[in-house]
Image 1 (cartoon, rainbow, N blue to C red):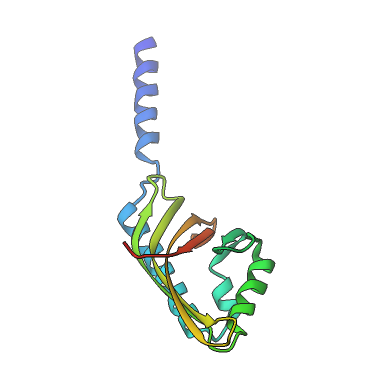
Image 2 (image 1 turned 180 degrees about the vertical axis):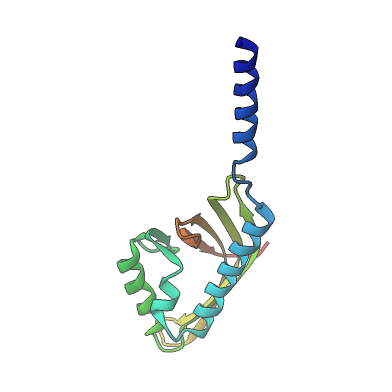
Length: 156
């Protein structure tokens, strides 16, 4: 009887381990890359601030170079609207690296970005930089950016 119980427990454990959801990291990486590219395309179009802001989580933080941290979706929306309401403003970026954690619940992207905006004299200036974004997979399966940080400088 005791042997049957031990065998039953082993079989039950094996069954439960076999039923654990397997994370397809390649599929999650492709989904995160697709989300990130959709976000970039939406920002390049620059026509709908709410569509751009929807890619950040409600609790996201943005770390623009030389400026205070922007925390929360309402503040991020105001920050983004300010940029797009500036004549001549544009932004673009392209992810180089997209990485998803083994558990499939978080990831990050890195790449190059480009901002164009008027300087103090009103002349349009384009600044090139690098960025890192940290992403979280939400309960509904969508990917949301939770940390967005970039810098400017030489591209070496």
